[in-house]
Length: 304
Length: 286
Image 1 (cartoon, rainbow over the protein chains, first blue to last red):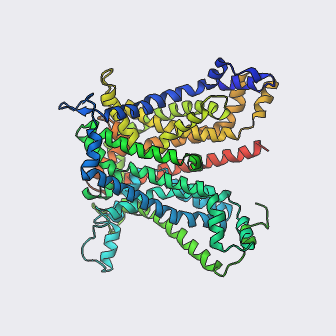
Image 2 (cartoon, chains in turn orange, yellow):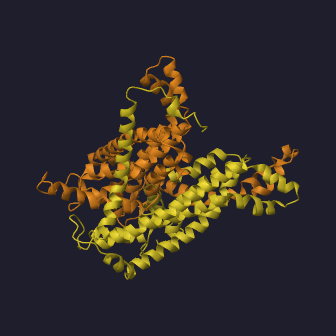
Image 3 (cartoon, rainbow over the protein chains, first blue to last red):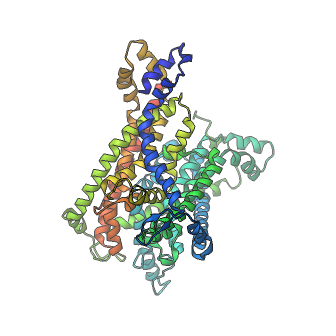
C-alpha cells in the first residue's frame, strides 16, 4: 500500500528512504493498472505496428512477409491520400468552427454572467457530451434525414420542392454533426483557461494606450494559448478516427479515413488495415508530442 | 470574487458595449439551441404515432414506449450492457484509484511517463483502441491462445479507456488532499491501513463515486470499441445500431430517448457529486 510507505516517508528522518524496495512499494498500487494498459493498449498498438509491415495471405492470416507495400499503397493509390487529406480538412474546419464559436461563448460566460448562470450553462453544454455518442449522431437523422425536420420545414414554406440531400448523405451534414459532437470539448478547454485570466490586465493595457485589439492580441491571447491548443487537439484528434458519423449521416462519397480502415477489416485484410491505422496513430502521436507542453487533459475531463 | 470588483464595473465602457453584449447573448443562445435541437426532435419523434417518424406531427402517443417495455431483444441487449458496465466499473474504479496514489504522491520514478500513459487512451480515438485490440485478439494472440470475441473482450476494451478517467478524477481529488490529516492520524497511533480506511478513503470517496458513475455511463454508452470487440451478443448501442441500419423507426427513437434521459441524469448526479467534493476540498484545505 502506498499510504503505508508514504506515511513513513513523512517522518523527518525519512530522507534515506529511497531504497529500491521502498520505491517499488510506493509504485506497487499502480501495477495492476499499468498491467492493463501495457497488455491491452501498448501491446496491441505494437502488434498493429508489426502487422502493418506484414502481408495478409489467402487464408486471411497476417504472415511475416516483411514489406512496405501497405504503406506504399497509401501514397500510390489516390483514394487513400485524398480521403486522408479530406479528413484533415474536415477536422480543420470543424476545429475552426468550434474555436470561432467557443471563444466568444466562453468569454461571454466568464465576463457577463454570474457564477450560478455559468455553472448552469456549462452543465447544459457538457452533460449531453457524456451521453451516448451513437444516440447523438443518430438524433441528427431526425433533422437532416430525407424525411427529417429540415427538409420538411423547407418544403412546407415552399423554399424547395424536392428533399435536399446535401445535408443528408453528404459532407455538409457530416460537418454539422461533427461540430455538434465536438463543440463541448472546445468550450470546456477555452472556459478553463479564460476563467483563470485576470481581466483587469486588459484594462491596464488599454489605460497604457493599447487599442482593444492590441490588448487582445498581446495580453489575452498569449495567456489562453494553452486553452486554445487543448481545444484544438480535443476536436481535431477524435475526428481522425471518425467512422460512425459518415456512416450514419453521410453517404458513400463522404467517407473519412477511418471508414477506409474499416473496409479493410471487413475483408479481414488485417495487415493493410493496420498500416492505415498506424498512419492515423502516427499523426495523432505527432500532434500530441508537438503540443505536449501546452496541453491539459484535466481541464476538460475533470470539469465535467 | 469580492463585491464591487466585478469585471463589469471596472471595465472601460466601450461605445459598442451594448451591441457586444447582445451579440454574445444571441450567439450563446443560438449555440445552446443548436446543441439541444436534435435531442428535442428525437424526443418529439419518439412520441409520434406515425410509423415513419417525421414532420408534420399527426398525433402523440406513448405507444412506442409500451412496445419497448415488451421487446425482449432490447431487454436482453440492456442486460448485456449492464453486465459489461458492472464488471468494467468495479475493476476500473479499484484499479484506477490505486494508480492515482503513486501518481499524485510522487516518489515514483517515471511519474511523468506514467501520467502520459494514463492520458493517452483518453486522447487516442476509440477507433484505434478498438481495431488495435481486434487485431490483437484475432491474430496477434492467435499463435498462443484462441480468443473468441465476446463479452470478455468487450470488458477488456472498455477497461482501457475507463481506468484513465478514474485515475484522472481521483488524482485531481488527491492533489488537493491535506496530508496533515494523515499525519495527525499517524501521530494519534492509527495504523496506515486504518488511516487509509477511516481518513483517506472517506475523503476521496466522492471522487471515486463520481469516477464510478462516469465508468457506468461511458461503458453503457460505448459504441466504437464494442463495435469491434463484440461477439454474437449485442449490447444496447450495438442493438440500436443494427436497428438504425434497417431503418429509422419510432421505437428506436423511444429507446434512444430513454438512454439519453438515463445517462443525462447519471452524469448530472456525478457532476453534482464532483462539485460537492470540490467544495469539501476547499473546506478541508482551509
